[in-house]
Image (cartoon, rainbow, N blue to C red; front, side):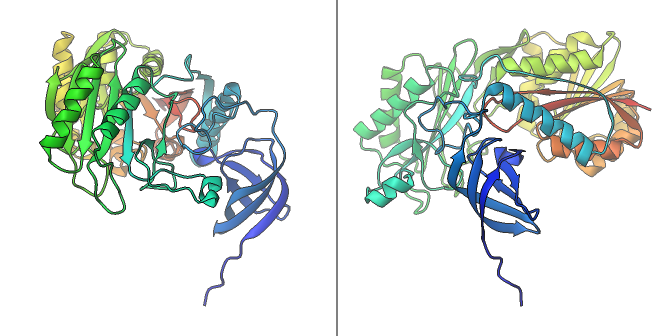
Length: 468
C-alpha cells in the first residue's frame, strides 16, 4: 500500500533560476527541488507544493516577501492569465542570459559533449509584434480570475482569444495582443463584433456544441493577409453572411478560407480547406526568396529571426559552392531554398507530402534548379541506396521536430559520415540527447542559440559538428 504524498509549505525560498517551460526553480533546506510558475530569479517567496516524482515538486506562490531586481513591468494587460508570453515580467537581456544558460546546460549535462566554441545568443530586434501567424479560439465560456469567481460573476460570455494553459474549454478574451503585427488586433476584434451582431453561437468545447471554433490570421511581411474561419457545423446560411461582412469591414483581406471541424480537437490542418475569396496563396519573402504560402503551409512564424537562423546555418557551413547538401525535415524547403545559391545541390526530405508540393512550387517560383525534394519519413527515405543515388553529402543539415531525430536516423548519419553536420533544434534537450550518440564519430565545433520567440521559454539552437 503506497503512502499518500503530502504537500509541503516552504517559506522564504529564493528563486535561483528558470527551468523548462519558463518555470522558476528553487530548493528547500533539505534539498527538495520545487518548480513554480509566475516568478523571476531573485524573488523570495512562500510556496505551497506537491511532489510529482522523487524529490521534484510543483508549487504555487502563496506570498511574495521581496521581488527580484530582474523584474520589469509587463506591457500586456493579460499577462499572468494568458500563457503566451510567460517571461514578459523579466528584463529581455536576462531572458537571453537564461536561454543561453539553458542551451549550455543541455549540451554539457544531457549531451555530455565538449563544445569548442559557444557563440553569443542572437537576440531579436523586435520583442513585440514579431509573429506572422496566430490562431485564436472562440468560446462560450470566459476564463475567470480567482477574484471574479469569488464575486459570483458568470463565465457564460462569448469570447475570442487564447486558452490558458490549464483549461481546454475556456478562453481569455483578448483586447490587445502584442504577438502579431497589425492589423491583427483590428481583424480579431472586428470578427468578434460581427459574430456577436449576427448572434452566432460560440463553441463550447466541453459540451461539443456551438458554431464558431477558430480564427487563423496570417499577415506576411509584404502586407498580404490570409484568414481561415473554422466552424463546427456545415451551415452556409450562418457562415456566408459572416464571411461577407468580414470582407466588407476588412477590405485588406487578401485570401479567405473556411473549414468544417466536427472533431474533438481544434487541429484544423488535416481538414479540407474551402477557398471563399481572393488569392489561394499569400506571398512572403525570407532572405530574398519568395514563398507562396497556402492555408496548410508551414512557414516560420518569425520571419526576421528565421533569416538570422538560416544565416547562422550558412555561416557554420562555410560553403565553397561545390557542396552536395542533404536537408532533413525540410518542411516547405525554406532552409534548402535559402542556401541553394551557396552550393552545388540540395536534397531535401520531408514527411508531409503537401509541404514537398510547396517546396517544389517555391523552387520553381524563384527559378532555383539545384534542389530535389522527397516526401516520406526520413528514417525510411534516408538509406545507403538513397546516398548512392544522390551522392554522399558534404554537408548534412537536420532540423527535426521537438522530439528530435528517430534513433534510426541518428544511426544512419553515423553511417553516412558527412564531413560536416549542422543540427538545428527547437528543443536543446533532445538535440543534446542526439549529440551524445553522434559523438561516437563527431566533435561539436560550434553552437549558437537564436531567440525566435521573445518573452517565451522557447529557444532555437544551431550546432556544427565535424567528423573526427
